[in-house]
Image (cartoon, rainbow, N blue to C red; front, side, top):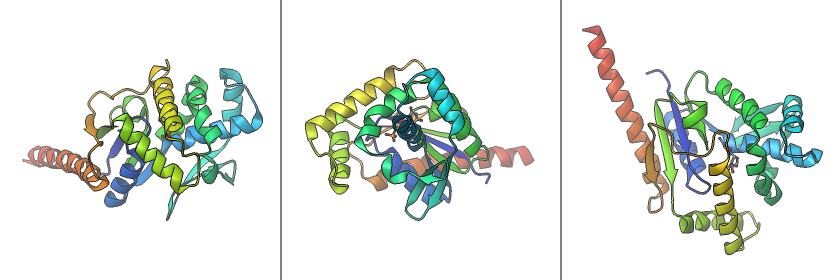
Length: 233
Ligand code: DC
């Protein structure tokens, strides 16, 4: 069957990247973490010390070449030839990324890149606006949610694992602030995309989340196999 496009949107800590990566592995598809692209632009903006405004960010995006590569340990992000993967989750980038990604010039550049990457299907793409703006006609669209306590717990685990900031209150506050900025911006805010299936991951294991999405894919494929068969009768 022709490879399809799967979109996974949702707030920070809902389980998007872990789930999307595993779904892609199971299907032999490419996993695209679009948050890393917004983080890459944010890192470059911080380094260049420019204001988070339309004109300077538009010029910056014109000068950057963002390339995503798949490696055995996941997606690697290159900016103009430099591998910046390990820098993208630094607190200063995380704190600034919502402001940078609210600027329309940044969204125009990155949405265009994402559409080019996903043009032929066979991708699982996660982010905030993938099912609503980037690929509104994707065959399988998922909206992942989880309650704030569980999302904080997950981020805390990740922070501990990488030896970063582990203050629980601070982490929760940052997640709430980022959700608010991402949901209230005027250009392509975080919303539940029309036609998406909502999955609450609060009490689900990663395997359960992955299997629910694989079930949606199977059900899509069964429906279209039937339509194809009828078409031939
Ligand atoms: O998924 P993440 O935490 O790495 O995303 C970082 C930020 O990037 C997020 O707070 C908002 C922005 N983002 C976006 O605006 N649109 C996307 N498709 C993906 C991420």
